[in-house]
Image (spheres, rainbow, N blue to C red):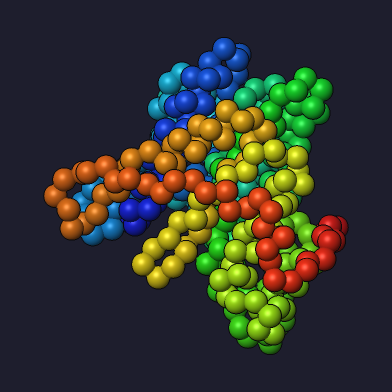
Length: 306
């Protein structure tokens, strides 16, 4: 069992709402696919309480109408065992052991290309390679473009605080540990990322501006994959922004549903409260559109990684 803060509970609550609507909206399709790149724990606890809640895998398995194909990717052997027990009597679900950056492209070859497909990409930090995101986007691309359908929808955790910590202020440490190369794997390209980092070190931009740029550059890359509807919700704690949840879809209905799920009043259990009271959530703001026009420095074009 793993312990989480209320914002993680809220994240899975939003996922539950979205998947329920996604499944109903696609109920006429012969197949529906759910992919969980970091399936994680089957049981979780809210920090400071005895309250437990299911993980994303069980959430997806309980959706009605059910997904016809569920693939749960997990690297940790212990979690793989727990997930395997969870799906033991569910012929529609499989657990895939290994690094999802290796196993997802292989798994896609056995999944129905025409099926509405949702991918939950929820790493702990910087583990998700861009090549995996691109493989997911390309999985249905030819079919989607020929028949005006949607590519794989994705909801991605982007660790803005992780980027800031990794690239930090120490130029020597970043160079010795090839951290810019590691960061570039998140984007599948270089150029703008390094320019933002250099500008932050030189004092041309603030730390907050650099943090926003790292996120918006990632969203730019998703737009380059052809995603027409991008939403982002920064997740903050008392010490600042932790990460951002980025939603990518080709369909305006997907964006509308995700915006509804993120904005609706929602319970966020806390150790210092006796009762669950729904809290109002912030209204969605389009933070990404036109961001480069207001950014203090000009950014170069991307250089794709080999």
